[in-house]
Image (tube, rainbow, N blue to C red; front, side, top):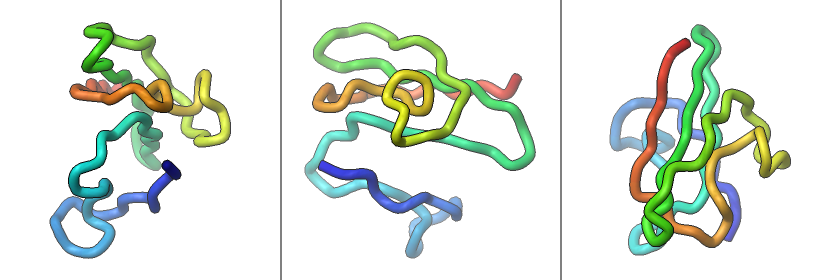
Amino acid sequence: GKWLSEVTKWDDTSNGYSGIKGKAIDGIAIKSDNHKIEYRVHLLKENRWLDWVSDYNINDLKTGMAGNLGSEIDEIQIKIV
């Protein structure tokens, strides 16, 4: 698919969540204005965690986002460092 718009709220109103009902998530990019964060994802079918990522750049599929396009994500870990 494509990247969806950024989520800027923490509720179920407009722009408070992202996703398409019935469609798997295969990539995420996370940033914080106030904290340094690291994040990683678990691939469902491969049953493995990908490496930690700390950048935010949806055009950089190696270090700017977490996921493998086309591989369903079933878990996300986020830590403040």
